[in-house]
Amino acid sequence: MEEKIIKKKRIFSGIQPSGELTLGSYMGAIKNWVALQDEYECLYCIVDMHAITVRQDPALLRRRSVAQLAQYIACGLDPQKNIMFIQSHVPQHAELGWVLGCYTQFGELSRMTQFKAKSQQHADNITSGLFTYPVLMAADILLYQADLVPVGEDQRQHVELCRDIAQRFNGVYSDTFTVPESFIPKMGARVMSLGNPENKMSKSDPDGCVFLMDKPEDIMRKFKRAVTDCEMAVKYDKVNKAGISNLLTIYCAATGKTLEEAEAEFEGQGYGVFKPAVGEAVVELMRPIREESERIMKDKAYLESVYKEGAAHAQYLANKTLSKVYRKIGFVAR
Ligand code: TYM
Image 1: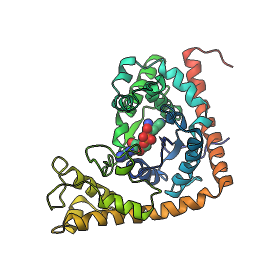
Image 2: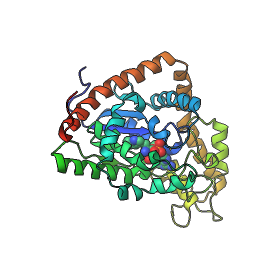
Image 3: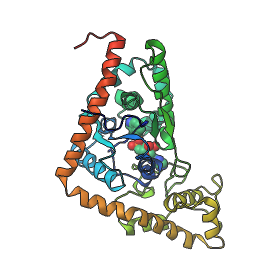
Image 4: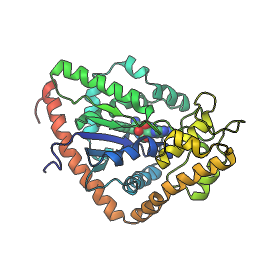
């Protein structure tokens, strides 16, 4: 099979189908994926193997994996331009993951803040998969020789570790992997919970979290109830006004306005005007995505053709790297 585009730099990124897509994952990641799809050769993945690091309901996982693809497309990712696929359809991820695990230190993995947080959340089920999760993530990226990894702020540390693993491997066996860079947006890199603006917006906290598929009335209700402070001023101050600062960031990411423009727009107006205005901006941003996604979801044959073609193309690229790696480390050719 021919490679679609040869000269462009390459992007890899993915999202776990462990819940519905959130406004956080949209603003932190997908928005940039859409913006970068013409400039780069992009692989956008549904990382179901990462999702099983915590317990999943099998029927839900299956449904969400396909729904997530529909939502990627509804957000504006063109399957003609991008390679879109499901991680478990490309076994090379697991194969390279095993190899890279042999070049990653226990101490490095112990320092991952996401592992520390998740092992607290799932204290009764801290699996070795949860611990070695960042190694699989490094395999995802390095398998495709990706130059750029567009993610939210919470994934920066994992991409750093991926770079360290790549450099270490290259140091031992000569240049094998492209050392990737993370690409983190200026606005929306860390969308905070509406209910508790000290915490990241996350699918595990449904009240503080806006989902891409939420109905307009639910989105409005969540924004009207968003926790703020007892002052009146719509001003960006992350330390003293975490809630308002988060809402301002969301408003700016949704409308493309700058913080200064947004502050000026709401000067002298109370939170009773500001909060619904943010809600409306998000409703308008999400409406076409939800409608388009519902339409695409009805066409299962189309979705299947997209993920099958994506996996075939991804496997072709992945094999090139994996056979190089196997040769370098001394495995006998099959
Ligand atoms: P995941 O599935 O938790 O999140 C998907 C993407 O959304 C971003 N994100 C956010 N950005 C801003 N504010 C938030 N509140 C917010 N919540 C989530 C995340 O930073 C991420 O970009 N390990 C990854 C998935 C992964 C991956 C990869 C990413 C697996 N392999 C290879 C890039 C490359 C994860 O758990 O993301």
